[in-house]
Length: 212
Image (cartoon, rainbow, N blue to C red; front, side, top):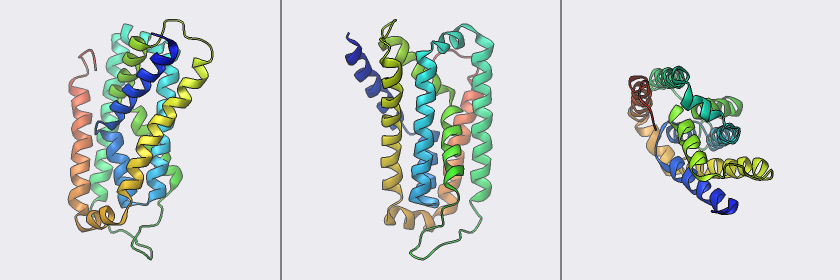
């Protein structure tokens, strides 16, 4: 397989992985609906930067260390699980708090910078995403990729991650999804919190397991 073909396969695999609903999807959709389109896009941008981080780590071969040192792998899973549960608790507690609405029925942007960091931290706290990247790169990337690959591939990964989640943010920040969210906000937020907490608990319980 040529380097170009390998990169295409890697990008396709990453796109398919991003499209599987998980904590990243939940965070982007919730911020886009409950806060604003700008917050959703800022969260998506954080996901893209997280993708660059994962790609750079994979290119540096650091996942080899992760697979070789079992306690580090377990610690990463537990830490990621604990963080997701913390985020879930924040969503649950905020579900019943009133929203301050602007004219036109949209909530004021809470803080684009805060939404960005929430997106980035949510992406980086998910060990399954890290292992997904490591496995894909190990399986598809040539053992000694050309120098240009170290600069081009992370940028393309950012485009895939940010592009997908930007589409999610735009779709979920439209008028009809927002009206539906406002009508059933408490239940939607608590369902989202339950999903994120369940993912966190699953990571902690499975901390001693190998694989994705």
